[in-house]
Image: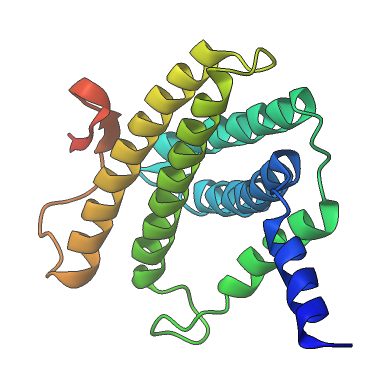
Length: 201
């Protein structure tokens, strides 16, 4: 086989236009796998902190993030994108393996775990918001998707990110600075104006 024939075949392969449906399927399944990991993590965080001032906020986030995953599944159904369950299962396994990450203690849970987990969740929410924005672009021209739904989901992702950041900053202060001499009992975690979160007596 001469080099001209090889070159022609290579050009024909590279000249093939990408299949948008296939690319959308890969993209959404990647995010579905990430969503599964996020739901597992936030539910575990809510259980861990259910008796702390942050417990109610984390429980609310866990419910919302699980609902967001269901919204993603609905969009995938509307777009005729099947879920690739092996990839989803691999994402959940990755979250479980991540629990073994050394964080300063080998047996007990470290206070650093709170910081790392909250950072991971906030990054996950930011990634989810990016996905909603990408799908919103598609919804402009695809009648199978509800454009207004993405505006609502983006607003909710913004609130989730604000709450997670407030929790993260509190956890960082508690972990990296001297303990607060003031008693923590009787304090509760409340949402402030604009979706911000704060500690209150």
